[in-house]
Amino acid sequence: MNTKSVKQSVVDSYGKLAKSTQNGLFSKLFACCDPTDNTNQVGEIIGYSKEELKAVPEGSNLGVGCGNPSALAKIKKGQTVVDLGSGAGFDAFLVSPIVGVNGKVIGVDLSEDMLSLATKNAKKGNYSNVEFIKGDIEDLPIDDTIADHVISNCVINLSLNKRDVYKEAFRVLKKGGKLSVSDIVLKKELPEFIKNSLAGHIACVSGAEKLETYLQYVEQAGFKNIKIETKANFPLELMLTDPQVMEIAKEMDFNLNSEEAKDIASRVISISISANKEL
Image (cartoon, rainbow, N blue to C red):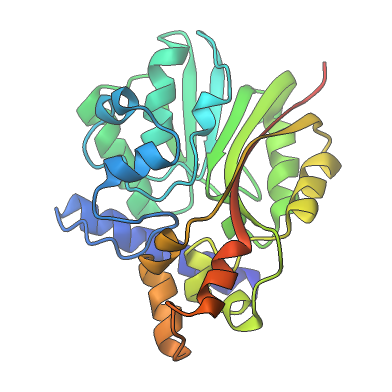
């Protein structure tokens, strides 16, 4: 797969999800970690509290995350936070009251439709300290050293150039700034038919890399004190209900209830990591 085709497919798929949400047709066209139609249930599974899930505008939680990066960040009032792949704004809106009126949250996304939905949600919830901008997380349209924190939720795995993503995150952070990311990685390599599938890539499966390789990208970007905060097996039931994985199975005439499917699920884990840019 080439970077351009993957990137366009991701943008198109997220755009469809955003449009379906704005039209009241939240059809779950795809999901990274979405076991049911109940996005709040998914949110609780991946680490959000009931209070957090109730605090954001309807339509901002799309159930496509795999962790709660804002919970790791120890964000303070007056700080600037950059959210990579901000989607409909869910994590940005959770961070907004933490940084307060003197702080700022900058959400970056490549999908025009997602940006439109996030902006609409921001107006709905009166989030005056949140801004959403169009940009590629591999080449951020943000000045050097302006952020106190960089967060991201199940997005970096979609990039074929993860090393560039982490270099950019490092660049925009101030000295002493912190990185808090939730993402999908592999314990073992996936079968080739999944690794080469665009549908699998959009579903946060085929774009995932080995944990050791992933952590190298973070370290090579310059980050220190890299810590795996949480690590959990990717539940088989989440994979079984992911529409994109179902599409792959149908294309490949693959039995998702087989022992082979269980083996594939056992290779995928969700992690939350933290790191910092030294003073």
